[in-house]
Image: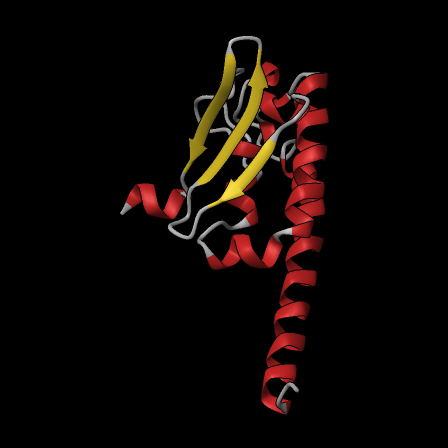
Length: 135
């Protein structure tokens, strides 16, 4: 049986996650706020938007775990200034979200492993939270 303080702690974390997810839904609007960027860099492709939506659904289901291992929504969903996903774009924009058979596995040290089947075997990539890279 759960103790009262454990239940209260769970409720508090649940409220924090709910507030965090509300901020995530507002991140899409943040792309249009930066006037100093080139107009072309503010327009992700349709495939990138579809990837972002898939990532958002996954992040909503795993928000508590992702926060615990060091991922914040603004790092996960950040949009870069370059038209490709390598520089400044968060993992939510990655092409692999649309791959059939994708498996996403967060690791306790903060890494996220993305694995999907290919014709020649299996492809894997890994992302670190921004806070870990900077330190």
